Image 1 (cartoon, chains in turn red, orange):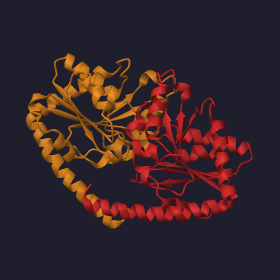
Image 2 (image 1 turned 135 degrees about the vertical axis):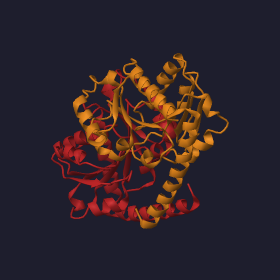
Image 3 (image 1 turned 180 degrees about the horizontal axis):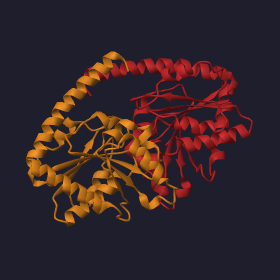
Image 4 (image 1 turned 60 degrees about the horizontal axis):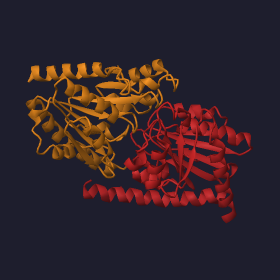
Length: 224
Length: 224
């Protein structure tokens, strides 16, 4: 990139970081655990989230979601079937969410009425990396249908995540998924990340991921 | 986006368009049909291309490929197995290829020694839309594992394509792929696009796509 563009990009990122920092303070004060879901398009963010919202509500948790897409409200409609409050951000040509888009979309919600807030980012393995949304947990999804080497091919996003969800594991045999290769690729760029092997269709692994989030929320509120 | 950034972005795009225009002239003069492959990560660009390169060479066509990735040379290695000349562009943090990256990577190749040149773009459903690489044909891939509504959710890229390849159709039943919904979504944003239903694994549809490219190359050379 040209120096002048790099400079402007840095200014945009700095401003985003400031706003994300302020948002993080608000989330912590309200005791809500915020999760930023990132992945390539079609990795199964919406299906995972719909099932997660259902199960969390069945356990009595208060949950909400914000979903970003270039166009259409398809995902917001799918998530709303869970009964949780859902809001949509249409990003137009923007390939990621930014902190100010999230901040504006939160208006009118009382954060302390939620235990968990999920932000489903735009499907993209590059753009969302550098944009902190004030989340406590960044979760990256890798579908078994995508190819085992994606983490090594898109290192910044995978490296930026706190945890990784292998998704659509019910299709592993059909696509001859090489589990060891995928785990090695994740290990190479995100050795710090917890890994959950999940299927929204069969429900495999979903409760483990919910337990993890519940534990993270307890930590958040213990430290507050 | 901020006005100053939009302005700079437009200047970058204008410069890219000029260079792409010059490249297109070179490609046409050399009689080489250039194909720009775009899709989300994991839609199967490399698998489709490897099989395409093999079959085209078996028919006596002279083919070459350039492949863009943020990191790793995995795809270049896979494509080189076909025996075709392959070059890699590592884009670092850039989520798309640009005309000047392609122009520089072409140095040392004699274009008139190729009948077809394939450019495998970075896996991304947003960033590559606006960057003309001088190609004659832009092909967008949509894997049956990705979700049928991707064209409506990422309209600019699908709209910019000349043709669409449904990929991994051998998995259609396993993922309960809704073919009519996918075709309707493509029709909504890219009514001009030819559609090929393919599987690199079974070989379905690959010869039809090659026939299409061969016909496009004949048109190119008839008009030259």
